[in-house]
Image 1 (spheres, each protein chain N blue to C red):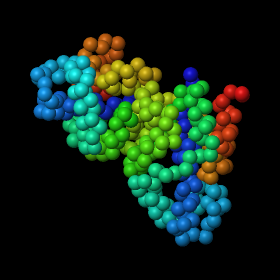
Image 2: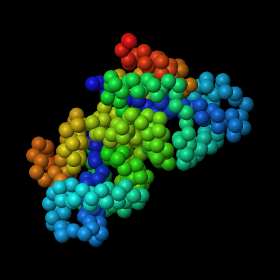
Image 3: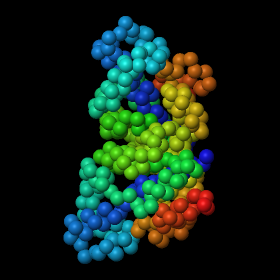
Amino acid sequence: MLRLTLDMDDVLANTHEKLVSIILSDFETTLNEKDLNSKSLRELLHPKQLTKLNKIIDSPGFFADINVMDGAQETVYKLSKYYELFVATACMEFPTSFKDKFDWLKKFFPFIPWTNIVFCGYKSIIQSDYLLDDHVRNLVAFKGQGILFSAPHNLKETAYKRVSNWNEVSELFLPIK
Amino acid sequence: MLRLTLDMDDVLANTHEKLVSIILSDFETTLNEKDLNSKSLRELLHPKQLTKLNKIIDSPGFFADINVMDGAQETVYKLSKYYELFVATACMEFPTSFKDKFDWLKKFFPFIPWTNIVFCGYKSIIQSDYLLDDHVRNLVAFKGQGILFSAPHNLKETAYKRVSNWNEVSELFLPIK
């Protein structure tokens, strides 16, 4: 059975959507929702705003109520019949997130056992055939085949096979019915 | 630079020593310290005692004050000059341990950055040249070269290169001065 490793933020969980919602409601900005989905928040926000956002991300509870990406639950369940699935999330920068992330996975993806969950920093440590991730820095460090999941901060990347949503993940990885 | 991944419990941290101390002080048992260091606690304790011990392990704070293995700090620091070091601990079974483990590593091994810390379930996910671990089940699943760190539960194993303490790790991995 081939091993497929899934990133969490902006792949399983719609983290960017929550960040955009916080910026629109709590930040002083002229940017609208379309702007905030056009490129990376690092390019769009001022350094002080990024510091404020990082503090929010690093607060207990931030990861607890993030929405699941459309179609992720159904497709990941199907994938679990054909692949050895792992979830690997680079969350060591935010130690307060550990428990929220673990509980979130248990709630929305209960069929992924704790044995197959990884909290890490650099993803070069991941031994897998495939890695589905929205960050090029993770795919560059990875030794298997990397697949880029579309997100505002990677729209101009051309070096990796790209999927834009979970329907496309399904088409790429699941056999035709 | 070759990558060397270090297990935490009973390799960097003297977890077995703390468990023995708890058993001797809080459990009703005729076993003495020598008995408790002769084989695995799974073989030595009754199922009810194992359940009680697992509850203690799964309590917040259990991992916070474990002693560092003799010689580990000095040798790991030296190893960090010659290898790309990672720490990988199979702690997903005990989610309450996440914060204590992260803080413990920061306190006793501050030169290992958060980017190189991994919390996992199965260690088959680890991509590394070497893995130093006290559990054969982790070494079996690992694709690089596994080195067994001696512990009461692995004394009869013969399939792996073995080290008995951090002096021997130093001799095996560091160049002669």
